[in-house]
Length: 164
Ligand code: HEC
Image 1 (tube, rainbow, N blue to C red):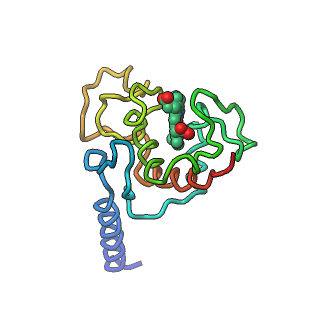
Image 2: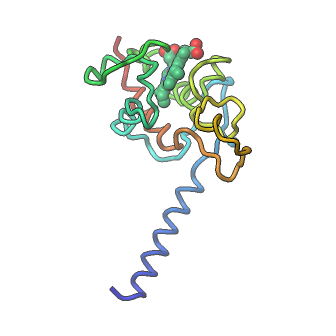
Image 3: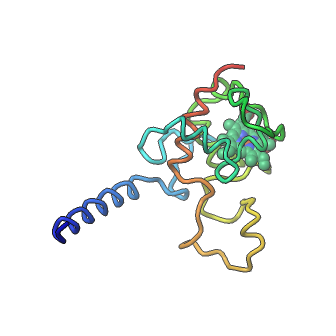
């Protein structure tokens, strides 16, 4: 492969990466409606329900099923009942409300045990890893528990859960 081709490919990759980064709404720039809902997509890229289901059930990702039962996933073991069941959640809440709940449930439910999945401030985080480090809050390295696209994927999955 010649070097001109490589640099052209690299430049293209950088443009693509830059475009997606700038389209993403940062936690601090999220526009809320009625304090609990987020009407606008965080990325502009439609969520993928299959990937959302993975985020929901994987311990290393959202691990939502640790607290929420979901009949649509009979194969997932150890589903919790700390929070309401996901059965019918897509009928109880609008897409905008679901986006708001997944991003920051403490807006709708102050003092909720549910982790804040999209917030760049450590203020109301439940994140054991950070609690045990002596490091000061650094906005450059601090990351949200889920990425903007993972939130969109989860919301795209939750809206499909309309049956009780
Ligand atoms: C540590 C437990 C916990 C985890 C983990 C958790 N939640 Fe929750 N969630 C709750 C609780 C508790 C509530 C009920 C609100 C309240 O009273 O705090 C709730 C409420 C909700 C609601 C509103 C449900 C309804 O029908 O009223 C949605 C939607 C939701 N959570 C989605 C999620 C998603 C998606 C994830 C994973 C990305 C998640 N939750 C992870 C505890 C949790």
